Each structure stands twice: as structure tokens, then as C-alpha cells.
Length: 405
Image (cartoon, rainbow, N blue to C red):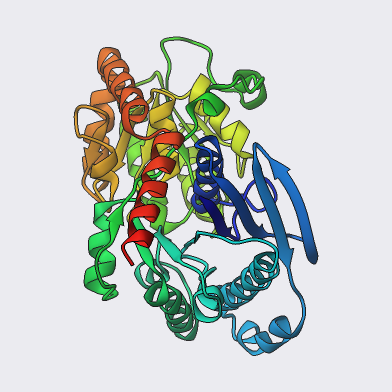
């Protein structure tokens, strides 16, 4: 098949989060399976730029013409999300339209978050597939955003969703949510996220002990959190976790990596840790590059912590599973579909610090349990979540759905 993949987020230039990670693995997985893949991604500088990697063609675009001027009123009202989506959608449409003058695509895939397919589904005659990750209508209420921005963003995303040919979700949880709360018509097919284990396992050459001061002592237990420091990610719960677990176990270290967007780490957590004399076993690295996060995960972390209030199927969890780490996660969203409690990780009650403390105590105190959970998690990824397996599922679905229409 000839497949176009629209995603503003795409490494390395715009590889900001999970959608970019998914798009990268999906594009490469499809190419490995023999498909012709062309990615249309965002750029940080104005213009249109072409490149290629791993058999995947990439066109990056950033436009600063009439669309940029047209949404200035939204920008003035702090409507950053809807402004971004409108500009992203038009850029994707413009680049894809030019490409379609030279080549035919069997299907165009895009994420709902970003509304990348808004103009494509409206103005171009091509089969389209939307992949649900984190719809604005479901998550924007967790952020400090203007009501106008929430409503416009949800509206433009919904247009692309309603007009697409095929709908997929990386978890059954989200498939059910968008059907019930966004009135998305069925079928919504569940196709999980995949990962390239060979790429993930490559030696990164980073000595995390030397670079970040993490303990080399084999008796130490490092609990690692890598995400944005924001309420949606459950950062407000970690004070109680750190205090309870570090007071009880003198060999436990907590390590944090992520952008302190709202000053929660600086103004709340660090002062609390210092006031309780726990600073020697508390590590905050700020925002790190993805290779650094992965190096800590693979070479130093013993436990990976996911206290989020809302998640679908995050790559942070899939990468921790790939690294063979014991995971302690909330029971929110699609997490129970990734983690089987007591088998491939530990599940705690959403937004409930005491439940996390109890789960952390179990894995901190039992090295055999940590090893068993981590090994089972790695086997789970190997058996069903590799990039080529997931790409094959998606391509087979596209072929069946397009042939049946």
C-alpha cells in the first residue's frame, strides 16, 4: 500500500510526545512490512522541507501566510490549542495536496489530536484513517484553558473525525469513551501502539550514574517518574509517596525528569523534601532529551511510576515494559489494558496517594517481585506490541475496510 501519515509531531524536530513517538514507530513499521510511506510533519522553521530515513519519506511544513494571519484573533484570546490545530491542519492539507498531484495514496492516517486531517477530509478525495490518542474534548478540561479554546479545539477535531473513512483507537477504553462522550459512530477498531525493540535496546552510550548522580549501589532502589510536572500526570501525589516510602526504606531514591510547567516541583515538592531532610535521595533533572530518559530507564531505574489521572496507552509505559522494569501505575483509562495487576506491573487507585504508597512498598521490599514483573512486562511487549506486528494489523485493517466500501 501507499500510505500517507499526517502528524505534526514527528522526531527529531517535532518529537514532543507520545503521538510523535507513535508516528515514528508506525511509519518505520509500515516501511519494514514493504509499504510505501510518506510522512507529512510539522517544522519549527517556515517553509517546506524534504528528507528520508529508514525507507520513509518525510515532508515537513510550516506556513506563515493567510491562515496564520486569519487566526490572530484566537491567538490574542490565548486560544493556543485551536490556533495550533488550524495552522497544522492547513499545512498538512497544503503539502498533501501538492504530493497528490504526483502520487496516489491508498489511505491517509492522522491523529485526532491536532486535527491534522481537518482540511484533508473536507477537501481531498482520499480514504482516511483517524487514530485516537487523546481527544481535546476529553482532556482539555484538565488544563487551565479558556472555554472558547476548548470548544473550538473540540469542534475542529470532531470535523476531521466525523468525515474520516476508518476510525481506530490504541485502547478499548478510549474507543468506548469517544463513542459514549463524543458520539463517534462505530466501528472503532482497537489497534495498540507498537515499539521497535531493536532500536530501543541499542546502547545509548550514556553513563547515567556519572551524568545524573544516581546511585551505583546494587542495594539501592530507584523509583523513576518521567513526564510533565502537571496535575494530569499526578505530580501532586508524589509528596506523600516520597515521604512515606523514603521514611520507611533508607535505600530508596526517587528520580524525576520532566518540564516543571507550573512550578509544582520548584514551589511545592522540593521545599517539602528539603524540610523533611530527604534531599540526598531525591533527584530532579528537569526536562531531559528522550535518549537520556531512556538511558535512566534502562540502566538505573528499578521502578517506573505512572500516577496519571488520565492516560490512554502511553509510550512511557510501553518503554518501561520494554526495559523490563516493574511499573506502578494508576488504574486510569487504558492502563489496565497494558498492565495486568500483579503480573506485568502493579495497579493503584487513581488519584489516591495511599494506594500508590502500598503498591510501592510491595515492589521496593521484594527484589524478586520487581524482577518477575519486569520480565513479564518485556515478554508482553515482545509477544504483541512490536512495531512490525502493530503496523501489519493497521495495514490489514485499512485494506479490508477500503475494499469493503
